[in-house]
Image 1 (tube, rainbow, N blue to C red):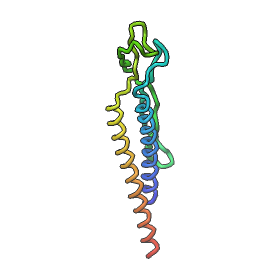
Image 2 (cartoon, rainbow, N blue to C red; image 1 turned 90 degrees about the vertical axis):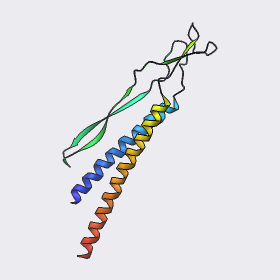
Image 3 (cartoon, rainbow, N blue to C red; image 1 turned 60 degrees about the horizontal axis):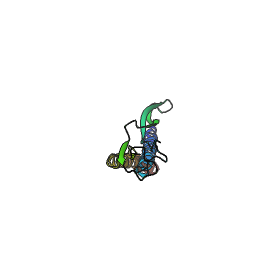
Image 4 (cartoon, helix red, strand yellow; image 1 turned 120 degrees about the vertical axis):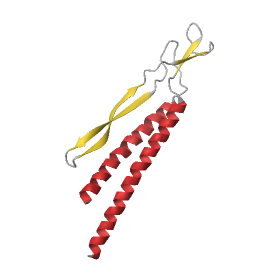
Length: 139
């Protein structure tokens, strides 16, 4: 029984690590949501994306969550007419980041809830292990 509980803690810990990285990517995106190019015709900040994959842990015989890749969103950059901006092109348009703050906030909320769910699994498994030890002591 404790092997299954230890495995569940390891699986939940991998989920905690993955969601923590996801929150970091979301916070980087939000911090750069209004970034522009530094020079005319340059590229502004491109939204980062993260993907996950299941990795089989042979020692435990279960899958754990691993970070697959951190990539770049290839959505088009927004443009805004601002002829006085230092990064404006010859027509007066400035290229802005392709980060949508509403999408990032929704992603942050989902990552936060996933993090909390994994944390609850760790707490419950820890409590079950403690209760098992207490039962063994009483015997």
